[in-house]
Length: 355
Image (cartoon, rainbow, N blue to C red):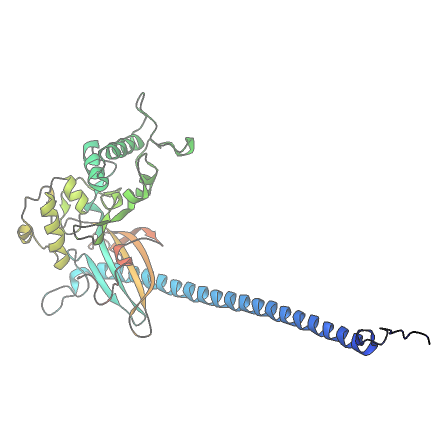
């Protein structure tokens, strides 16, 4: 009797139906993984596209609000010029000016879409950069920067810039190469001051500093003290910068009292300024002909609260003799599409600084 041989040919692994089923299961698993990867890729693409669309929508909305705010600011400049042209011809029942008079430092304006404040900055309340002696320039730069070495450097640079020829052996006024060498001519625009050796944007534009309680407040820069249309004094007490008051000899405590007093109401005479103490060297009331109107506008949200969109424009004007130039008693000397003001961080609507 021959032995019995057990063959594995009939095991379930060798059955064709089982092999086909395993192959199909493997294909379905691969297809499922492919579908999942495809779904993840499509979801990532959709998320990216939706994020891009949302970002572009927000950007367009922000640009539209910015454009509206710019027109609100530039329109307030035009309106402010018109108010200056009317001057004190229109009075309220209490005798105050309906629109503007020289002692008013700012003009609040309210619109359905937002609010604006127009600051009136007389150029004659600034020191003439082309005529001021070097010691006065040094005192102004020292009051702004607080650094004696840098103040001396800036004063020397200003004198060299405006002098007809460079002094023998004098160091170059700038360290930026021959393209930016001093012009050896009068300053035509106050922005040329940015090219003077030792000048920085913080000293030129001003910066925020902390008081004794740690609160930040804006402190003006050199542009608030110097002007190509400025004077040698006396300076209007309602608008002269604190740094320039310190430079002309006003005590720091008196400067703080003057700033506090004029923030509450215009100083109409030097007798009114007596509440700030004194003395007041080289200060007076009025005497301004050239003004810079600086309008800061802020849109309103639908609920009436100020929005985050702010724009500031400015124009420098000269008030002419109304008897000779009755039709157009104001001449625009320069216009700034973009400017900066402390009101850019302070809502010009309700709750803003007093008129």
